[in-house]
Length: 271
Image (cartoon, rainbow, N blue to C red; front, top):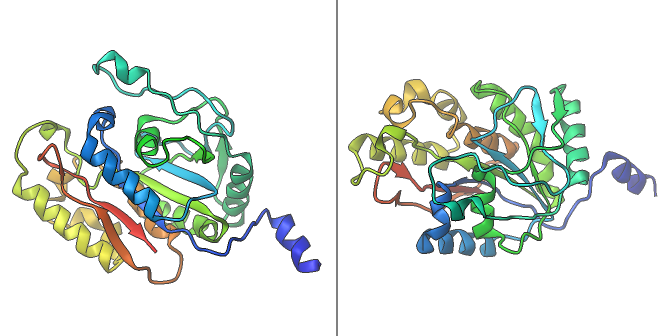
């Protein structure tokens, strides 16, 4: 009885399975019309246990201190411009996740990581676009969390604080792009620098070489070309941290190049 009370007091709801931690390339809103990529994302979700809730970390939300978005359903954020009107009509009314928010606050407090709330902020396109493909019924509670900035070790340690969620049915979901040079957006052909960086990061992720992943600016070939700014890479560091202390089995459920260009679709699953 005492053990059960302690579990209840901590907000912990253990499951009989361990969720993977993932990082997905999220594409622009036009991904919603990419039949092949949408199918790949849908198949990936079906191959995983269905989560009790999702903690989403998108490249499109940086705010210090780490901030939790609306814990109830809120209007989406259409944080893009110049697209056809239909993309501003997308809806994704996922349930809010107040219990997950309380649990995340507790985990961050244990690590002395500051946390704030932004109760009116809905999901941005880095969050909802892949979710539309993966959980189209919008029946899984979703909570979005901001990145507190672009300090590699800080992001990794934030992920480590979240690692207990894996045993509680929560899918920790980083969303970004492992290569992201907007000067090459929508240009046909995959440059050699993009392939070099993609190969390097794939190897580092397979080995979960934390030092290399954190120091990618220096160690990775073509890093400056692949990531002139690196907010789209940053969520993978949180995902890597959330794996915890055990060495995971790492797979790439989706690979290839968006529009056969410079943006790798490589997505990662840590089991």
